Length: 407
Image 1 (cartoon, helix red, strand yellow):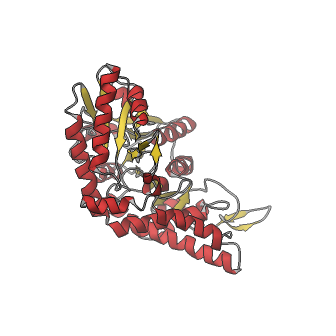
Image 2 (cartoon, one colour):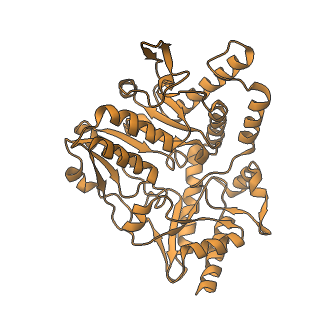
Image 3 (tube, rainbow, N blue to C red):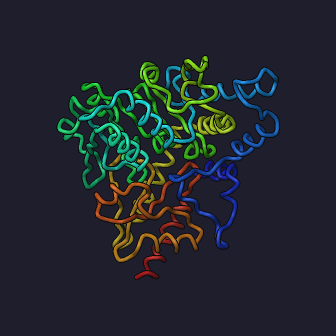
């Protein structure tokens, strides 16, 4: 994607026009949350102004209109990730809620004492802690796929990790710290050979190249809207229909029921069985608007642009003496995490902030990854479709200045 086009795209993002500490904002923290285009911001405002009414419950015009928009959003999400049916799309409050839904509902019925759950060494806490709690409840154990020094999963060891007592394999599509993109299909094939289900954390993957859940052959796929240029407080869980049908409800209340009496309650069919209470219907429709924006720009061109940013950043940063980049796999997502010898990651981040450059510092909700590489934190720059080479130049200049100050 030509950089003159990116300059025009940047005009769609109002926040990129502002200043912080008297400096032009350079936003390099999209891995935590992406900025929102004006079409998404205006769509959310329009929904509250013109169509706000509860879904699935009313026969009046506003309720009927919002219900249609909500279900259209479900169809939009299904097409975006390649789901065979919109009934396989469950709206949640975010990827964390999606993963917890599976960890409670599926594990409550199918996990037993002596079983094991497999995760990787580079997972986000949200794809570790729910499984730990499930294992504690049911008397199961956690097993870990290790990574090598480049951040690649050591898949040659899968045969000694995944066995006939493995019930769940939970794996990231792209590491939020290293950018590593595991071979999800290969992992899924091994997991399915022993009857285990596979959950993919798609938070970073879905925004950097998208996904096809059928091609992956994952049983569950989770992502958050706010990393995909959509609003906060909305997320998605995809699941294979037969598996979702076999699971008990995670939460109960209104709209997930079929019939209720004091003697017995029956539940609504998919996906409503897992959507108790009033859903974030405005968030769901606004997420669909964000997906339309991405589709309009072309996911393939976005990937090409982000790859050019990643290559340029890597080349420039490695010219700084003492700087080490963590995660060097050739197909990584546009995320660069690094440290500089003799400089604290937090101090670098604070100095960059004063220069208008927003990055993430700390353990990035991935402490096991930090332990693997022997550090307590890293500086992370994460890119999006609206970043430019000038943003990278500002980052590099800022790091150089921070190093000179701190040393």
